[in-house]
Figure 1 (cartoon, rainbow, N blue to C red):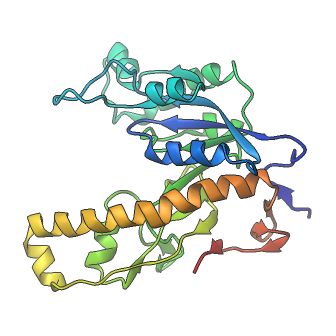
Figure 2: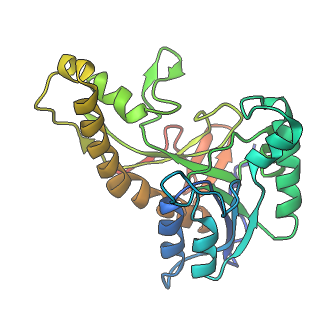
Length: 267
C-alpha cells in the first residue's frame, strides 16, 4: 500500500485557506512565514464564520479576519454562523443542521482553488461535508501534547487543556499540530512542539482552591505556549506539508518517507 503526500504538487506553491473566528494570531504567523523567500505556500483565502460588523460589548471586534485579509491583500469570504442559526430559530448547540452550514461554506470555497485549510482559531465544529471534501487536507494546532493517553483515549482534548495539564501535575506542556477529523482533537498527529516546563511555587491543592490565582498561572503558561509552541510549529507544519514531507499511509503519518505514528517531535 502506497503512502500519499498530503500535498503532492510540490512544483508549485501550495494554496492555503485560513479559517478564523477570532483575533487570528495563529493565522498572522502563518501569513508571515508565507512571505519568507523560501516559503513553499501562499495564503490565498481567509474565511470566517463571524461577520466583521459584529462587536463585543467593549466595542472590540469579534474577529479580525477581514482586517487581516485587507492588510495582506488576501481574498476574503464570510458566512455568519449566528445569523445562520437565528434564521432557522435554533440554538448554535443544535448540531443537526451543522452539515447544512458546511454546505454553504463549500459554496464559498468553490470560488477559490484551495489545497489546504488551516484552522486558525476557527470555532465551528466541522462536519463530514467539509472533512470529506478536503480529506486529510485540513489542519489545526492544539495547546496540548496529544500523544499523552489516558487508557486508550487522548487525555488532553477539548478546551481548558493547559489548565487540565497543570492541575494533573504534568511537568511540561506542549502544542500539537494535527489533521482535523470528525472526532475533535483526534486526527493524525503531525508536529509536537518543544516543551514549556511547568514550575509552580504553589501546590496543586492551592491552585484548585484559588480560582483567581489559578487563572493567572494558567494564562501565563498559555501565553508561553503560544510563543514557543503554536506560533512556531503551525507555520512550520504548513511549510513541511508544502514541501511534500508529510504523507499518510498504512502506518499512519509518514515524515520524509518514514512512519511517525506519534508525530515529528521537537526537543
